[in-house]
Amino acid sequence: MERISTVSAMQARAEALRLDGRRIGFIPTMGYLHEGHLSLIDEAKRDSDITILSIFVNPAQFGPNEDYNSYPGDIARDELLAEKRGVDIVFYPSVEEMYPHKQLTWVNVETVTEVLCGASRDGHFRGVSTVVAKLFNIVKPHVAVFGQKDAQQVAVIQKMVDDLNMNVIIRIAPIVREPNGLAMSSRNIRLTPEDRKNAVILSQVLFRAKDGILKGESISSVLAAATKDIQAVAHADLEYIEALSYPDLGPMTDFNNDLLIALAVRFGNVRLIDNILIKKSS
Ligand code: AMP
Image (cartoon, rainbow, N blue to C red; front, top):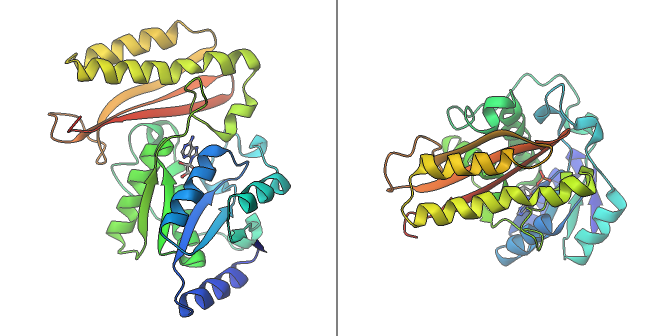
């Protein structure tokens, strides 16, 4: 497995791969890899012959009171896991390499960034779309894989790619969960053992909500039940639970669109997100 840490070396390597007729599959991550990330590698490999995984904790997507400085990291472990899963190149730039000068150019996707996590994390999605655009210009992928775990992020990136005519196919991989249903996340490691057990409530309420909707219950009644169930759990501080049409993230007026039920819950200073998609045909 190759390791590349400068933008110029990565761009030269990607250009050479393209000239050689290779199809580049790309998996952007913030590291501290788990099975959720590794499943994206499998997905990328299905549609490419070279896989490039980036590890970059992007300061531009963290607010001043968020967990940038305590975000978990272990590059040696990540490299072992990536290599075992068949990654060809790990791109691991420093902050100075990615942001050598004050960034004056930002990608700002409108509307879909104003709800759910965008409502409370001011500037978060501007940081995400900007770094993903930069990474696409550096890694030059044919295909990039993102996890449904971050459903709003997927909607934002797909919109950016469409609106800016970026020549990249976006693939979406399903949410990988712990055996008890908790969605895998690099942040789970920061939960206390008790909170980690209690955090199972996130997926439980989502599965119940989906069942309720499929049985014909109203959106407002399933959301009310889910809210009550979360509020009954020790230390669980509900930031939001909402049902929106997907991927446009507008109000759900009828069942002609997929329905996304998404939530964010804090346990102490650990903020967890999860979601479930109800396909219009299901
Ligand atoms: P992160 O390192 O948190 O920025 O995540 C990098 C990529 O992995 C994003 O596309 C995430 O949506 C995806 N991802 C994170 N957790 C999971 C999970 N449990 N299942 C599937 N994809 C995931």
